[in-house]
Amino acid sequence: MNKDHNMNSDHQSNRLLILVGSPRRDGNSAALAEAARRGAETAGISAELLFLDDHIKHFLTDLRHAPAPDDGYDELFLRHFLPARGVLFCTPIYWYGMSAQTKAFFDRSFSHYAGSGNGPEDVKTRMQGKRLGLAVASEETYPGAALGIVHQIQEFARYTHSDFVGFVHGAGNSRGEIAADPRQPLLAAQALGAEFFTRKYSDYRIETPRSHTVWESPAAAPTARA
Ligand SMILES: Cc1cc2nc3c(=O)[nH]c(=O)nc-3n(C[C@H](O)[C@H](O)[C@H](O)COP(=O)(O)O)c2cc1C
Image (tube, rainbow, N blue to C red):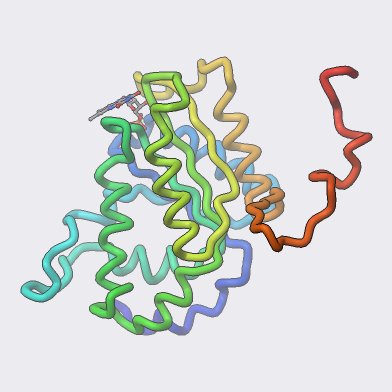
């Protein structure tokens, strides 16, 4: 593993990392990821799309008794995840949760977070303050199928002082079938990619200063009455 990850200084630049947690290279999560990448690049955002199972071959081990597994996780986490200011997780729904590949991404971060990897304090700092997004593909269309995953990303965002800026859910089962979903999740993913660093994000506390309107010119916004 390269030891100079601390030298990455581009955390503030608008780099979007898109992580796909499906083994299918031409599947529905990959289609959402590709759409987001297209949107990002159209908007001038530098985006990188990676498949998690190209990098993760093992689950988290008992770090007291064994070294961290020797696969591409360290490289993925230190050189791709930490420097990215935005990260979009794209996962199929497996048993009403995220895929094992996607879950392993979070679990394996513990080896760095807990001090078994390089520069633990630096790691904790650099895990914070990102913009995070989620795109899920499932066979079922009902929104509840995705809620467990939404909740997990929301809690990860809260824990890392990050902003959970967007969520897209599309339905399909065969490879690429998500393109036929009439709710047009690919268009939504494209828009999310394009607006990843500019989309309005609000999560109020009682003391949050705010105006009474959500959008700058509510009068100009299209309404159902129009
Ligand atoms: C192991 C496994 C579990 C699944 N569990 C669910 C599920 O709980 N709910 C659902 O709607 N679809 C479920 N599906 C269907 C996938 O979410 C669906 O086919 C999705 O489009 C696959 O995405 P992909 O093409 O990116 O792999 C499951 C598929 C597999 C292989």
